[in-house]
Length: 241
Image: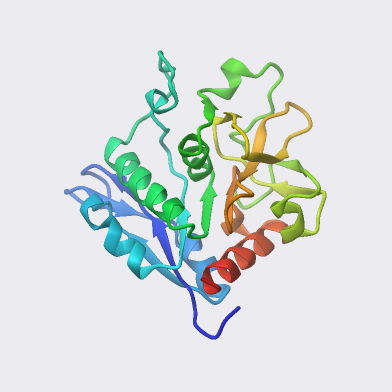
């Protein structure tokens, strides 16, 4: 990593009035920012101001698109129906689409986490499974019943991929907090991780870009050595811009 600490833009979640505030508010788990700081980066949380996307991208060296308790609008990947379980946050999605497309246009290092991977897949031309229990026979409990600080299952990592080079592993123990997943991606996007039990896609990457990686799990929890390696490699790519 270079002597200059890379600035990492991190997308926030948004909630309507209630709970923390009587007015709408932003939210982000501390460990998203914490792992960036621990790896030597400067975390910068991005409010959903689409008019400022260009300014944000001028300021940051890498983009982390986070997860959240909501879903990508199925209309964005050409679905004609919406499963009853799908929850939308249109304002957040509109902003994340704009900042993610802008980052990809600049070939800026991108890391998509959980819902962030799903949005990345859609932006790259892919499609999503809207509700795993309804579409995948014999599926694992991808919304794991045990705490998110513990692994829920293992993933197989495809050799000769960016993810394999980063981690040096053929499998990893991961947590699991999602009911949607990537269904398919077009060339040249590569599926780099999956669950052997049900075949659900757990990771994607675009080898035509300097660093464009999505993982379905949450490496910010640092459950497996692969998690720390992913964050470290992302920051190294951002620092070398």
